[in-house]
Length: 263
Image 1: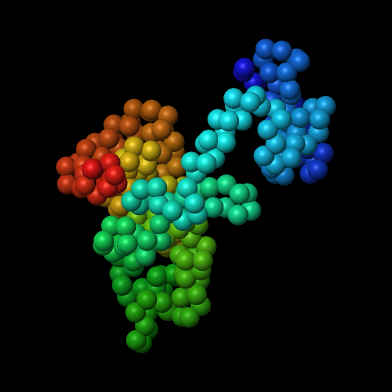
Image 2: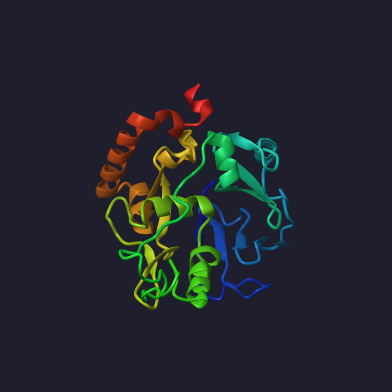
């Protein structure tokens, strides 16, 4: 059974008035027809109305059994599936989502600490990290407390990424390892600061699905476009990243794979 997914004018959610996705069968008009609202996270069936959460009325007996078996395989909250790979329960949506390890979890998983805590883009350490003005007196990083607060907000509270990927991007000085594109934020003073411009993505050289770990040797800073091109099979991205992967595997293969894959 094949369903075609599309949008149409005037097809709006009855709850929030946002456009809904329509699912109509390509085979028969007599089969169930559905609409999905991603804002309300609701699924409705034409002629029936909104379906209750986990309502399997639209599925066959075999499909119900298959879904039930898949659900039973989902691990409990905070249970590691592999070394350096973790799922957590999103309580609001009652779904499981993979997240980055904390620094404590990283050290516990790999038996080593992750470096690259402090990164300084200044070419002259006599200048302020935030506004690039000359430092006075005994100041070593910022010319004023205000600059220090602004820098802290941009690089911690509003940096737009978790600690582990931020450390990896810091290691690569916020440059794409494939194209060399500058991915750091430039503030109003024209100063580069170690924060994401929403184009930074971290690529696993060995895919997690293939047993790849979250060890730093398996992580690569790339731009969003390069990451997309790689997974779409675009030659320049594939060739460059595969070459880096080959070099990394020579030195760090044991750490780039989970313990399960190495055994």
